[in-house]
Picture 1: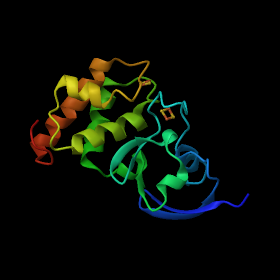
Picture 2: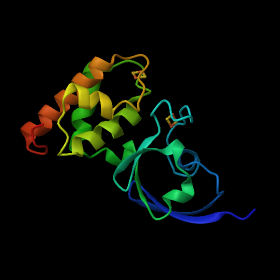
Picture 3: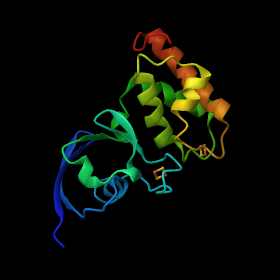
Length: 163
Ligand code: FES
Ligand code: FES
């Protein structure tokens, strides 16, 4: 069966490909994009596949590659130079230093939250916004502490308003 043509920009690099209609975006990113992302549960449970699609955090296992046609997809690799990621890398290292399997998805979801200048980063809101990512070997309270501390640093740097 002939594939469907898609043009997807991943971490700033445009990819023109033919894909099967039912190919999940998570498989597309894993199989076709150089240095692709590891596969997770593929059942919308772990949150390890979270990427930004046109700036919105989505679980890529819930989206088809054809739906990303014409979109800008940002994975955790594409966020390496982001101030929020640098802060989170430090605070996750301090508070969530176990197997680290959750960190790609957790980092993208946390960046999405920290970029939301309207978000009031209460413990409740951080828990709610990161509820889609599972960290079975960690402690939710430590994840909240790490995100809150990263927010404090960004506020001190002036790249985020206090919230
Ligand atoms: S791979 Fe998408 S939520 Fe686990
Ligand atoms: S540190 Fe192991 S799943 Fe989060």
